[in-house]
Image 1 (tube, rainbow over the protein chains, first blue to last red):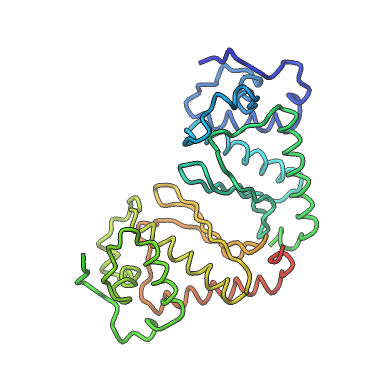
Image 2: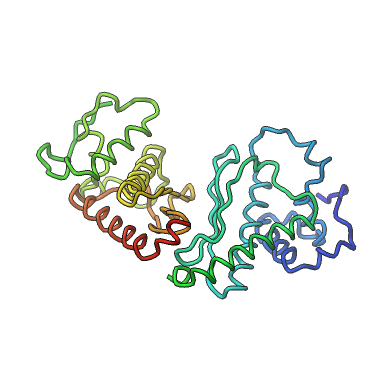
Length: 157
Length: 157
């Protein structure tokens, strides 16, 4: 299944960012049935961009499907991998969701919670643009690395 | 459904412990369909005791059923409640399990992981005796409260 309704532009500078690269890797890793084997990186990352139009096309209430859940997992896996790369410490992503798509996501380093997000409406998971995705991940990374620096004994426990 | 094959003795001193009291409360709270409404505390706690004979009756490999999962949840809810009571800080239990019964259980206080257990073979969840249950919970509580004391800034974060 090739996507024909792409919203990400081929010249989007964020496409070449470390964050998108890691996220594409994680999305491909979770594509168990190789349905995205022939997709470009742009095609793989594109569904994470939820423009206003795309968002309006999704019902407000709904259960997340397997593909959406895989995207949420890929996102927190990528975040944990980036934290691990930058801190040199093992980072473990934990996602706790009800089947209605409510719950929490954590990233744990040692005994320290470095990411703690409440999840809701996971069936509408996505970002307004790649720039917004990059901004959000950068914010979470900065916060996580700040906590690791501040409480390094706990992060190393 | 009344249990007739009880292994806990009515005069077991641990029956009156704070731990068993909390666990019974949690088990009753998760008994959505009131199937245990007329059970005594002894009857409610009894299934958590997995004697050698009971353990042998359970297949080595198996998926945990809803009732067993409710017991695991009750156990970590009780543990979190006791940590909360003793520390005065909010403690959040998090259980992450595959449907095969493998995963991890955490209790989080602030940004501090105070309990971190690997779960396996959850379909055989239980303790050799009430004394063993009490011993295990006491050990986890001591460790959690020790961590909270040591890293109080993180626990209060």
